[in-house]
Amino acid sequence: MNIFRLPQRIPRTHPLATLSRSFTLTARQSKNLPPRPKPPPDAEIEESFLKGSGPGGQKINKTNSAVQLKHVPTGIVVKSQATRSRSQNRKHARELLAQKVDDLLHGEQSRSTIVGQVKKKKAASAAKKSRRKYRKLDEEREAAGEEGPEHSPRESEGSSQVQGETTIVEPKHPQENNKRP
Image 1 (cartoon, one colour):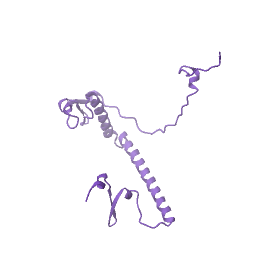
Image 2: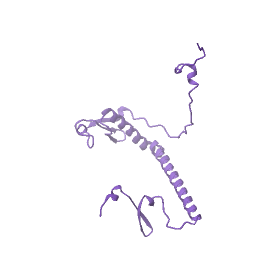
Image 3: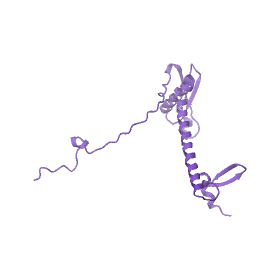
Image 4: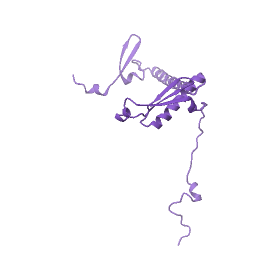
């Protein structure tokens, strides 16, 4: 009988079980965004339930699941029909109303404005990086002495027509290849 035999499976409660697992922690970049705005108090809100419309079937058209909120002090009206559930629509409408009131009260310092600026900055950075990449590729192509027309990355996606200085790119459709003369 071997007394040094280890069990086949180490139970999670066993002290050695934590030694065999490894965790990787990464530092999360803190985004200096203001907190999400709190909805105004219920005393300042007029709430009404409306019949929905649009996609969602007959159930949407028959039930009062759409929510309309009016913020009495500012006169802002918000309607939500995101789901078929009245309670989820109420929650969504309150979030929208809080955001609209925050925009009105804080203007340029509101959360949605700051988030929009951050997204715009990221998009500009990505576009700049892309331009830098393709400019470098064009310079390498010229240095290698390749002859031929200059192609932008978007021109290879479809056929192009040149009109004066403007290039119009027409995307290829999968069904174009199936057309018969």
